[in-house]
Image (cartoon, rainbow, N blue to C red; front, side, top):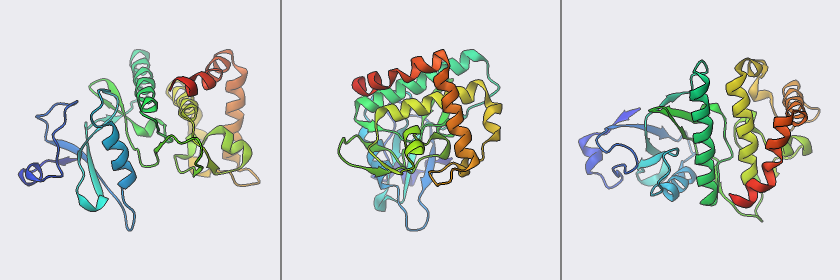
Length: 233
C-alpha cells in the first residue's frame, strides 16, 4: 500500500478514481521485478478503467516505462472463517466481475482466492498480469496460478492454448470449493501442479477432484454451463 503525495497528484501519471471514493489517498502499488514490466496489466486496466463495475479495480497510477502501476481500492484478503452469507456475496461479485470482463472481450486467466480482495464487504478481482483480450485464433502459453490450471490443459499435457471465457468459470468452481471446504486445499503443494509427465501427485489430486466435481449433481450443472458461458460472455 502507498499513499498519494502532492507530487504524485500533480503528475500526469495520476488520475483520481471515479468508481471508488475520490478523497482516499491510499492505493496499491505494484512494481515489476528486474527486466520485466507491467505493460500488459496496464493495458487491461486502462480498458476497464471507465467501466461501472464495482468488482474490478481502478487504475490511478501508471508512470512512463511501464515498470509500476497503482490501483484502488485497498482491500484485504478473504477470511475463510466468514459466515456463509458473506461467502455468497463474494461468489456473486466474482461472477458479476468476470461477466463484465468477458463482455469487454477480456479473459482473466488467473482466478483463485489470492486474486480476490474484499473492500467494504464486496469482492474485487485483482492481478491482471496474465489476462488477455479474447482472440479465437491466437494460442498463448498458460502462465496463471497453479491451482487454476485449465482442466483441459492438464488432461492434454500442453501449455499452449486458445483461452476461453469458460476457463474462468472452471476456476470459479475451484474458488467456490475453496470457500466451502478450505481444508481440502491444504493438501495441495500448488507449485507442484504442472503438465509434466509422468504426472505429479499434486496434478493427479487436482484431476481427481475434477472427476469428483463432475460426478456430483451440482457439478454437472455447473459444467454444462460452459458452452452457455462462452456464448453469452
